[in-house]
Length: 328
Image (cartoon, rainbow, N blue to C red):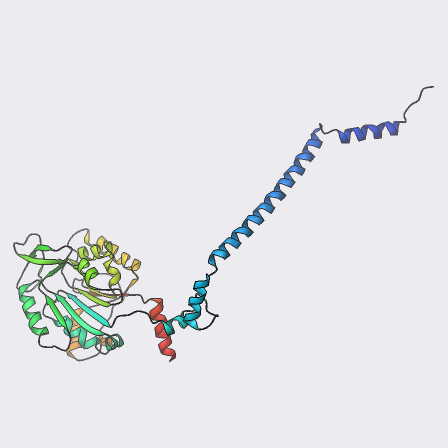
């Protein structure tokens, strides 16, 4: 007797066999998708675990040590002190500041700039709280004698007058002497004067806590001196600059001047304004205050007699001290 499988049973048997056969394209695709999904899942879990461990490591590194915590307690007298809580620190640990204010005059001429500086700024708070010392450099023999004679008439403020040219090295330099007018370092001159490496002199004689006000009236030497001050970073000692930029006499003068002013910002020094010395002289003779002097906030150099004023930005500690003082 012949036994036959019904058609529908045969069909189901073939379908089951097909589903178990992994050699078909659709089966391989299914397995690959499953493996890819599993791989992505494992990768995501590993990434989450990695970043979590890294965060814990950073937090551990940032966590203050026991000695740091004890130090903070001593400063504030309280455990609730954080790294941004400057005021509690400043109330106990005052910023180290010197009581010295130095006005350094490069190119004393006849001493008029010193007289005007004292007249206009003697009432300012910074000069009321610091001891003013004046230091001048004047290589021209005629101007040196005039400046020295005038400054010796007043002994209330310590003054030192050097018969030297401010320059970039300690040496004798060729210097044009024209009866006290427009004297300058000049390679074509047959006269010589002694010069001092001004930037090195600053580094050897002053500290960051001293307040330095430097006036440049050196008729062309300011470019080389300032470039060296930038190079050896002695410019970082300066708090205030008053510069009489010489009117361009060569093609490279203006680009070098602009480059120097750009570097001022790297040292935290901002441009304030420019002043015509003739206007300063007029206000001085009429016995008016410094506010009466016209201040031009432009930047273009029109003549060589214009004085540009720059000031170093205040440190955070200084600003906080001022705020605390106002609150009192």
